[in-house]
Length: 114
Length: 115
Image (cartoon, rainbow over all chains, first blue to last red; front, side, top):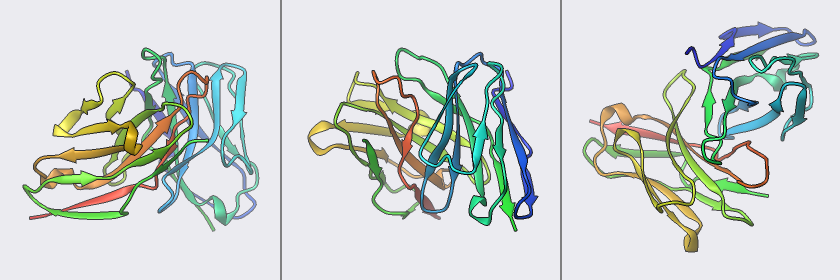
């Protein structure tokens, strides 16, 4: 199993550009989520999905879109990049491990918006 | 709503000394609690988790944590630090039985191990 994979690893965008961060998992997990990590703030939830076709907002959803057309993929779209979106983005997936929903994280995408 | 507080953004210990990283949570219902470790430029790796079974939880790499409901704490310990333990550690909480699987993270504690 590759686990949770994310592409690209690094990206530089100019303000106003759009892009999609890719996330895929091969563990058949129904739940997937996106977090952003900023210094001194831990990880904050952007969007999540409880299954194909179902998504919902997390703590910091503004400026981001998601969709889930398959179990495996959960892309995150930045509609019009802003410097405030400079961050490290992590995708995670989870399954029901006796009710604990243990989460598996991808390696992250480091995004810089200039 | 639940929240997580990690006391001390930086902790420095000598190699061989006790490691103690503090985590307190606030939750209106009994939570599940997790500790994750992040090595430089990598993703997060699960160290251990508390899911309402034994209150003393043993994890990987010699770490353990004790759930203390009366203190709303879930501190992470390791008897003897190793240089390879230098990393950032995150405490996280989730609420079972709500259908919401997302984790709420603390702000992290960077552990430095001095030779």
